[in-house]
Image 1 (cartoon, rainbow, N blue to C red):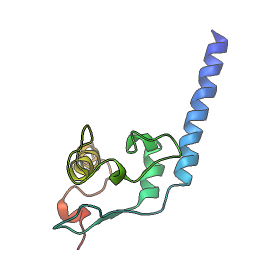
Image 2: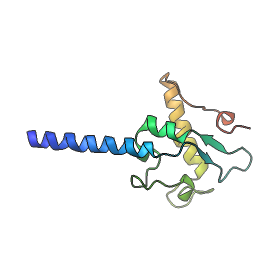
Image 3: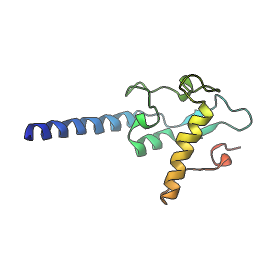
Image 4: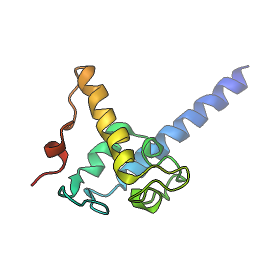
Length: 119
């Protein structure tokens, strides 16, 4: 049992460390501009999100660690197969996370259209 506990501890340290290392390599800013028609593109501090979340797979859910892709590689202007549209993905994942944090009375990002789509 002690060997299992030690192995589990080593695995947890490795997983946590990998997330921190990947977050350290995260780009400073990211801009989502691929499908905007009536609203300005969304630019956000990607590095700050990576450092706070510590798990790239939270957003880059289909990508292997260290091989994360741009959201638009899977999420297109329109729903395609199992992949929801980019707009729906961002509004669900990003705005949804901000709303949950707001409800928990934690500091968070914007939850309104103009808060993300700055003119």
